[in-house]
Length: 98
Image 1 (tube, rainbow, N blue to C red):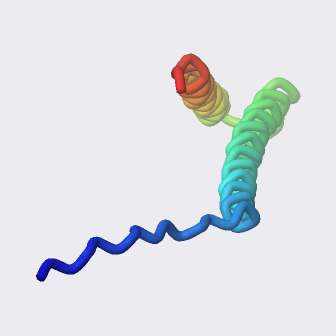
Image 2 (cartoon, one colour):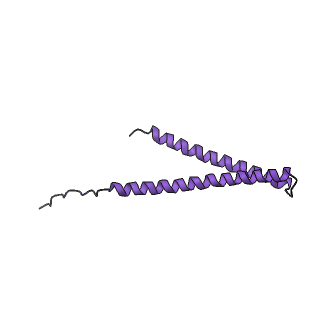
């Protein structure tokens, strides 16, 4: 004789656990974003200090001043491209139909 098929048991997902994981991921993303913003700001501050040092006649060489400003500009451009990608991904998710 054939045994009857038993009911499939679906494990219940606790809302608190899912919320905790989402908030932990959000905190990690927030920390990463804050770190990236801090690095860009530090780079900008370093470039400003290099320019001020050059303009005031301190022992700041022209090529190191130009490198500092270009590095700060490049870091800002990279940060803005990453920001644009995140915004684009968010907009794409919001356009999805459920």
